[in-house]
Image (cartoon, rainbow, N blue to C red; front, side, top):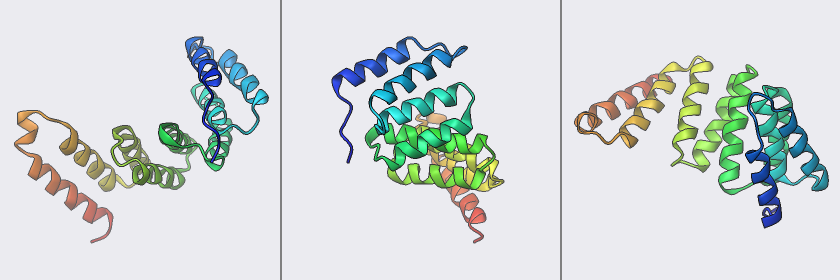
Length: 171
């Protein structure tokens, strides 16, 4: 298991985010790449470099960094974010089945993550698995929307989600 980020590296990462401009990611990519050069193979910094490339629209480059971060043992909430962003990147690269696999792994490891569930649904849809995608979103709605009008229909929402899951699984 890799060492967690030191307080100094956490501060350096926070500084990178504080100075980030989404419209011009080149300085952020350079900043995190330089930080990684000082701490080679650090999985958290690999993830940050991948995220910077991803935000810059360079998904092919981001993919490699995400894979290296995951192989390097990134854990905790950073692992959840890395798996989510990796799965989204794979979807954007047209690798829909691989995207679903990565996001299903994230779903299995982080079952309470609503953001993972949303991105899994997007990837299921991109993989032409719309029944499974809608089922995922219906379950998310039933689990998370707490209004009287939705709560009144929770059983029906869950029933429809189960029906769509059965269709998706060929049952």
